[in-house]
Image 1: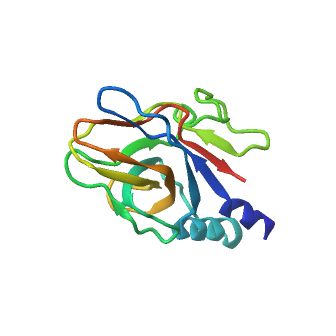
Image 2: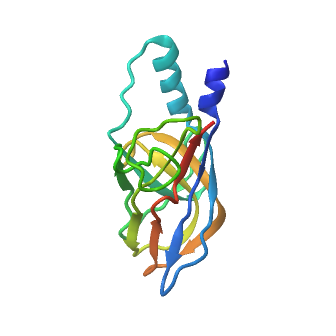
Length: 173
């Protein structure tokens, strides 16, 4: 039971910076928990002997309405929006909370962060981003977990949207 609790206690902090001519102040967020899909996959793999192959690439999605453990929410759409891919590798995810670390995770922290910026570039869509999620496919697919932004971010066509290196931090407690 204690081990399952550790997996359910996922937290994350991130910064979504949006700029037209300059940068807005960083806005942290915290993940709610693993999605129901991922919780079931982990339980089946860890305790029931079922195979589970984690995605070779994860996709960061932006939402304009709340996502939760069951999925849901309203993902950004239109213009040049698409989920941004991050391959599962030591080069892309830090072994510690410090961006740039390319060694395997160790110690007692259970922390990783993105080593490189995750960018949507100059966007041609607009809306108020309230949540983000990590998905297992570039379209459709399964939500792995989601997080609410601490402060909503209003995006207008022509803005630059990105997570800076080290801004997306995921902690397993």
